[in-house]
Image (cartoon, rainbow, N blue to C red):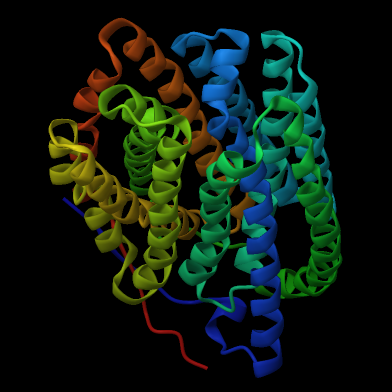
Length: 411
């Protein structure tokens, strides 16, 4: 069941950008992707040092899940609010402020004497994330030159690359809690980069205000009931993706250590391989969606992993490594397509839509971590993957999405 909606390109997106504009846009995309890399690398340290924190603070799996939930729910609840506010009142230099929150959380995490302080540190990092993602996603769209899927993929691959690098660096560098402070240097670099991006953003706002006044208000290409139905379906798909991803990002190392007897550092290297696959898959979803349609990408990236997730709990170490790589690679291509699909459904609300979907994704990851932590405590770590194996079957709901087929964009 689907609705086909033809939407004509509007505004600047309908004209081919000049070579100079393309070079500037690519530099900005590269810079915001690099900042995303630094931001998510720092944030992924929380996940990567769970085994160390579990031993040092004598934490249960439930407490680990609550730590993740504190970080991710803090981010998820604030992101739509930040996005809605900045749609009306853009704040270019809020990007640098976001990284400052992340820096504060990192430094507090490095000296935290108790579980309560760990929760506060996680909340600070989550606040930084809630400010960073809506505005940085807007910057990526502004610099896209009309290739919105490609721009989102470039932006997101930076974050996924950072998430993959965090566990690797944790395995190599972080041998005690205090050594986390070394990563404050990365946060300082990020603040400088984001301040410069904020300057470019300010100049774009001055130019864009004149164009928006001439063009008038953006109108959705779909009726309200179709938009509401599609947004609900997209939210369910994000739930299935990030709830399953939480099982791997939060508990994959414990699964490998318990089931296959791997050492902590070896398990962290396997987590790095999974996250590297996620980073590689992310770059494909956006540009492929630009070419063949985002709905097709969503079909393949959610439902397409179901055969692999169903087999995963029943294989040995070698095939576990192979299957998690495949799962990460395919599943990662979904989010760029989902996000741009939603932005096209509700034009003119880039910050709100980005904040809603990034926030919901973070929230589902946090709730998933807490729920699955309790499941691991009561039924064992293997049960986590046996129950989660069925989540990708929710990809069947993609049939209810409309077909947003824009006519080709010409100069």
